[in-house]
Amino acid sequence: MMARHIQTHPKYDDFQKAYIFANTGMERPETIDFLRNCEKHWGIEIVKVEGLYSSEMGVGVNYQIKEWNELDMEAKIFEQAVMHKSKGTYNGLPNSSAPYCSEVLKKIPIQKCANDLFGRNNYIMAIGMRHEDTPHRISMAEARASTKIIYPLLLDFQYPKTQNDMTKFWNEQPFKLEIHNKFGNCELCWKKSDKNLVEIIRNGTRFVDWWKRMEVKYNDTSFRGKKSIDYYVKLSKLPVEEQINFDITSDSCVCNFNETYDNE
Image (tube, rainbow, N blue to C red; front, side):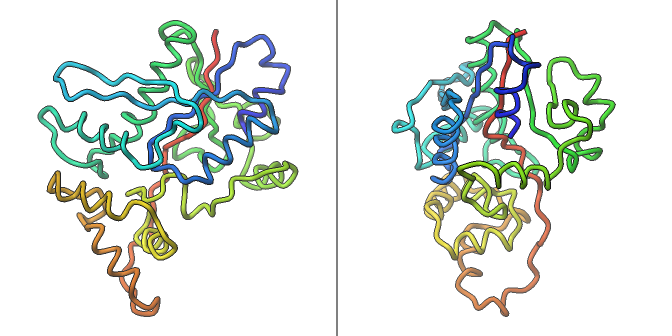
């Protein structure tokens, strides 16, 4: 919704714009279909990037540009990102105490791409926060004072956009993101609640064996309370009435998959 607003609003006519998607390799296929529909129906060209990672000490994260049919859908780059992060003093999987996956898989590759497109730090980043994100994630005063990051859905309208506004917007579009919000874009994101993780596994997922392999390799787990993927697999096989003591809370995912960068 924010991308479409920036594409069509006269306020942004004089800006050079880039719409960048950073792939983690664990994105749901519906997410890719949705982004391709953004291109098809709105004429927005999306730059697809994936992180490049090295096992050599002193070599940082870089990126590569991909075509749709080249995108990793098997979490290979996620595995490489874990390897990269674990080559120094830290060794382990991302978790609530070390939530590095968004930064290494999304933030840094996007920033590196934006630097190459517009010049180092010579761009504005647009973030699609809305009314429900205030004030616990950002206050309106902070949003107004920000210069390198803008918040169009908070500040470009008479009133900040809400979830109801988003629903209305998407009801008027010829396509939607065909994923229930409890499933999210990353298929087995460790930030999800126990209940949602179990439901995802019950409905079928590509990444149970991937998580098992990573837990063995790093002798670690990402999930809340140091629970293993096997814990969730076992729960998924129980009748619903026997699934008790779920952690029903869920962290808000910060893996914004469609961030827009504008040259100043």
